[in-house]
Image 1: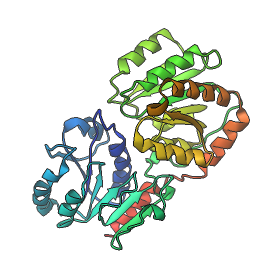
Image 2: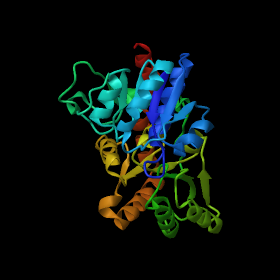
Image 3: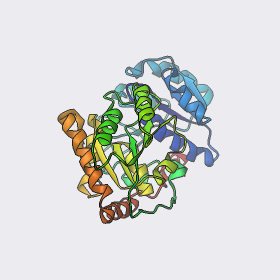
Length: 339
């Protein structure tokens, strides 16, 4: 048995659970049982759609320390090999409390050096050993793009850059509190260079503006809204350009090879976006928190540029596919099974 402690809701989106689902599937393929531990019922629909076992802790996801006594009792019956924690709200006391009875793995995006864990995973493009200057000698570090935990559907995909760009994939993550999908879509439809492109817009399950997106689609035949998407890799394969917020979706797009424009609208996305830009893998759309409406304009301008430059799309596609091989979840699962 392996526990995975992660949450999903309107405030934090679905990214934590989604990447852990990839690890869970890889573990199950090796014959290991997996159980997700969630604070509340918000993630239940997502977990059930993927056929995953779960337990609701009835706790506050922002204050997880209160869970430790309950988890200690659960450990006596489950006897898990390890618990993988994927939460920005995990504190040193929380981790320390759990390590008294179970090994702990932690999925890190920010370079945290305050947590003493058994395995630390940071698969991001900026993850290097120097990030963890105060390394715990007892911690095993799984760092870099070889550990990107992509789902099986993103392995060995055939993708061809078309001579003429026609379809744009627009995704802003599981939640979109600023309605960036709506702002970007409206601006694209108003720009004469991008108005005739076809748009596939992914609306996450916690998007409060999904009705607004559906209304736009009713008025424009070249707009499709996709909710509760289960075929993301297919949508990516069909797209000539992608516009995406920073996060795990960028690694999925890179694995497929879709030329993309990326942007950020929360702080933890910025380093990922910067890493892709520094390696000249993408067009940089900007930071919405700093630029607001000018970011929307810049993204649309990049879209027009990419649509009209087949050679640039070829370059981005080739570079992206070279950085992610889709075996990251299997590598993580392998390390867990060694415990």
